[in-house]
Length: 481
Image: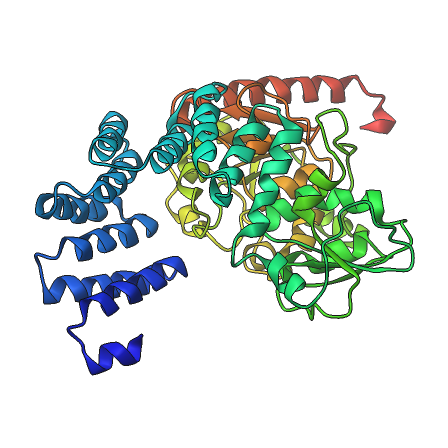
């Protein structure tokens, strides 16, 4: 493609294709550059402006993206694709009614029913009323009736089903992600390593179990190894490097290695951690929810006990996840929102934040104090081992929805999770509890973006929790204080 452009730089079809390939590869910065070049050579090219808007949407530059798509719509008002993209940008800017209107415009202009149903379902799942997924599921059912082999819509329906507690249907739909062309599953199949379906005997076999999404999913679903670790198989667990040493210590009978990067040959079967709930028939009653199912290194517990000390009510906090995650703008929280917690008498806020968001520690509101723990936590590639040792010495963890949240809960620590209005499927749509972690309490946004409301409720609860803790301590015999 680059060769074709070099021979004929004015070949717009080749330019479109290059931009589309970059978008499909999630190389959004390069795609934006390619789209910019198309616009520079012809400012009246609506298709170029549309591709530019698409790249800006994926880069979370919503205001610029809306300006680009408005230009595309002005140049070619009858293209339904432009209105679909316009809807997505309007929704990200909080202009929800206008976004729904743009979807209606797309349908009026010929958007295929299947595309309209799935786009509207995605919109409502992102911005609708929590706990009311009926319309979302109905729309996805209608889309699949028209395109029954659409893997992305199956996965969307799987997440919606799991959110409302349809476990069997949800897990089955979620397995369609294995049909994505770039899924790791395909690498194993191409090398002749079939997926373990749960029925094949494992005794004497070599099984590789791999993590496919992120650290949170790794820590959430690694519990399922406990159900098969005594199957007689030689099991290899392939996980991101940052989690490897912690998990190796917790599964001494299993070979724990890095993923990606593993040589996929030489195994009898492969299976994703995310597929084990489907294969093992998980329902709300059969979740292996006993905690802790992970444990910190005793030496690190002792190290951080000495460093942190026993003074005050020790609350670990995490406020931000990786911006690489598409929904990070909903889950990550400004550190300043935690200020009401810092004002609770007796509370020590202790940062367990790593790698990202640390600049906010230099811009806290007046009077807010957060203790840092240094590079061993903040900038340590093997930081999950250290983090687990810290968590063992804290009275409570108050967190946004990130990988360390799942780690803390897997360790059996008390966790308060601040969730956006429409959180991930594992937290359901309503309630303060989750069947995945018995030591977790959910504090949900009542309206989209209302972190002040969440932390106002948390501060009241924290004040009461600290008071109960002090009362219990004062009633203990002196030898036990």
